[in-house]
Amino acid sequence: MSQVVRHVVDSITPASQAYAQIAAGKIAANPLLERLAAQLAGAQHTPRPRAAQRTIVVVAGDHGAGDPGIALGEAHPTVVAARAIAEGSAALAQVARTAHAPIVLVDAGVREPTHMPPVAVALGRGPSGPLGTAMTPVDATLALEAGIALALSIGEADLIAVGALGLGSELAAVALLSAVGGTATPTEDDAAQAVALGRTHAGEGGLALLSYIGGPDTAVLAGLMLGAASTNTPVVLDGEATGAAALVAVALAPDVRGYLIAAHRGSGAMPAILAHLGLAPAFEVGLGHGEGTGAAMLLPLLDQVAALCG
Image (tube, rainbow, N blue to C red; front, side, top):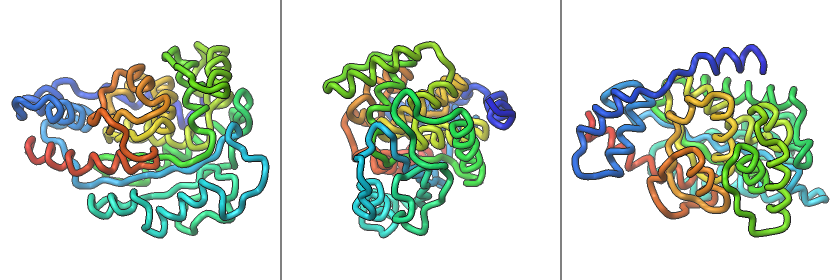
């Protein structure tokens, strides 16, 4: 672990249980709103949680497990999704406008980077390799540090909502969940292999897991969660790729768990990831495809929670 990552990890303190109880006590007879109030207040270390200043961060990165084997150019699915967000035609862009939340689009390691929209912030060193040899420790560390820098550069945010784009992320999520001791239930041969591979790395630290089976998006998002937790900023999770990053962040710094809010139950490995992290989703349904729409849809509700606690 680099000195930068170590310094940030060491600076993370547990979310405040005292402030969480005070905020929850201001909301009566609504378990969901009470829980969200407690999560916001505990993470922000204040009895009056805030939600007005928020940013949506979407991190794109392709995994070797999803390599199509041919160059798809501007037709690459990750590029197509990123362009739709940048051009404002994606569902996420429309929800973000309604929620008055700016979107930061990050290229952490897309396979066709020359076709990414100009607004994408390039932070990565390329897509990951196959599961088992996904990234070098140097690449994983640099991506973590990039995510930390991204979180700190956002500034005075009350909260950060995250999403992810990228081929192969679902297999990496299954493998990471298996590696940290979660219950993964594969439904396809590739997923079964990912579970088996994850188990071979059980008990290893967060950086090692990133290097073996993570992806560029996983690393940048995990770094962002570390940086956010170090500044008492809650992070709203979306789909399984953001959940996989949360597993890594918690492996590196267990207190990060108190700064995470699950927007919805999701699909794929996400329900099992949330169960392993001990997080109850706000909505027991899947909202969107993990690119940030589900997390963004929670923002108006968090506005109401903050108003009730004001």
